[in-house]
Length: 132
Image 1 (cartoon, helix red, strand yellow):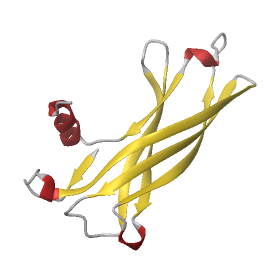
Image 2 (cartoon, rainbow, N blue to C red; image 1 turned 180 degrees about the vertical axis):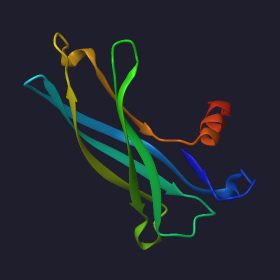
Image 3 (spheres, rainbow, N blue to C red; image 1 turned 180 degrees about the horizontal axis):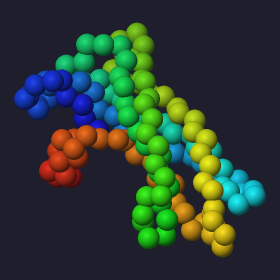
């Protein structure tokens, strides 16, 4: 995700920061018709030329999808990344604990947990337009 300063500019000089999910580790515990998911999510950011602060707010989400790829639960979070001592790059580890309640006949492996950065519509369109 690239966050730009307010205004129409979208070149390198307008970049506040770039952020991404670096790593996700999780474990599941099954008990009494529910699945408890414990996740550690590493988010890293790199400040850009337009960044003048010490902290970057990075929104992210954790969602549960079923076998048909339908989102059955989603929760948004905000992560605050602190650029200590003027560092250009910084990161944070978020620890999330989420419970999925199963219906009669459902099984935990039928579901998947997805994690990502929560982008705005404008950021989504920009990402779709980038070529890799």
